[in-house]
Image 1 (spheres, one colour):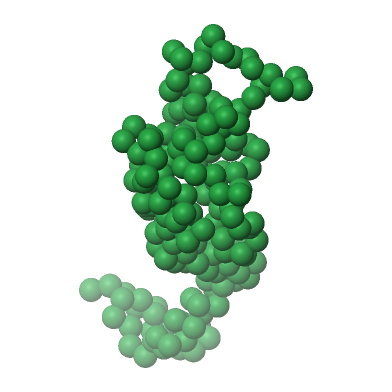
Image 2 (image 1 turned 180 degrees about the vertical axis):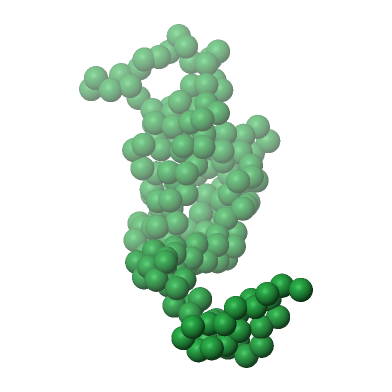
Length: 186
């Protein structure tokens, strides 16, 4: 049988099977000790990151974020401002040969995800804040991606025509072919 020792300050027995231990006091001491060990700042940071993570997860779910990982053109119409572009693509000559991603994302495997992440961030920021023009306009960095996609798919046809220049700059394919992928709203 294990020996029990008496606590010198209280006279209470200590050790296995000791009676009279105060579980509430021990639990309270552990709580104070945990906060003291962790500290307030790391705990506050963990709470803030938890809240941001929860808000991000909610927003991702509410905004149908997983749909943007697909190649389905309907996901581009999740935002009402894109519905007109989606509808005109449905009636275009490219509907059966190209999706939104084929023209608006890089054809390089890493570049594709960089452009997708960049557009995802800036599109969600613009649509969340309501800070975007109507009709929506393509940004210069995305015009470059689209031009490269045209050249990639149609390289057999255009290699002898390029570079066609206007004022020292290469003309964009959509300069002459503005209604090919979808009607450009003006």
